[in-house]
Amino acid sequence: MRDIAQTTLLALLDAFFHSGALVFGGGHVVLPLLRAQVVDPGWVTPDTFLAGYGAAQAVPGPLFTFAAYLGAVMKPEPNGVLGAVISLIAIFLPGVLLVYGTLPFWDTLRTRRLAQAAMRGTNAAVVGILAAALYDPVWTSAILNSPDFALALTAFVLLTIWSTPPWIVVAITAAAGAAMNAFT
Image (cartoon, rainbow, N blue to C red; front, side, top):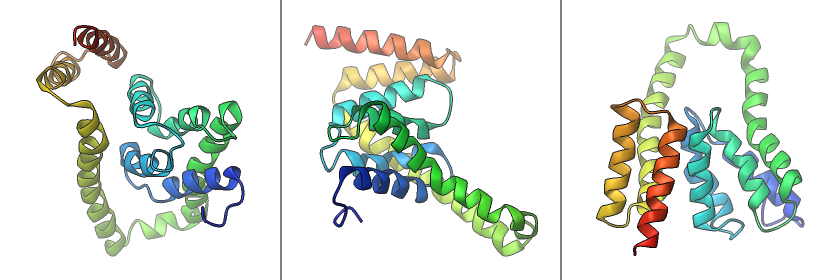
């Protein structure tokens, strides 16, 4: 659709609707899809994308709200508040339509063995997609040397072992990253 879209508004709607329609499982699965939709055409730089993803991890709520950030910071218009609203609506719309479309049939569908097996298989596949999303773009663009790895490992330990609140971990790693950049 992007080829036939004469306006960036249609391209924006297409990009975020497409990403929302292809996601199943968790919000992190959308990361590679969003990256392909906004970084590849040059709407958002890779660094801005990664910075927004980091900020989205520090706030509660679904990762889909990251679409609002992307819509606000992207280069072509509509951007800003209008771009954020359009992007947010477009990414949530496929899921909302699916819920309202299947809700009348859900009680019957979820009792069928074939549907249960399909859900288990899909949930297992999501684990692999999440690992791929962690590796590319997060790992490949953020872990470039030993100090980067040490910082990521420290953040992981703070989150998982010491149960440090995510916003504190983000603040600590942002300060440490700034300090590392100042000394290199």
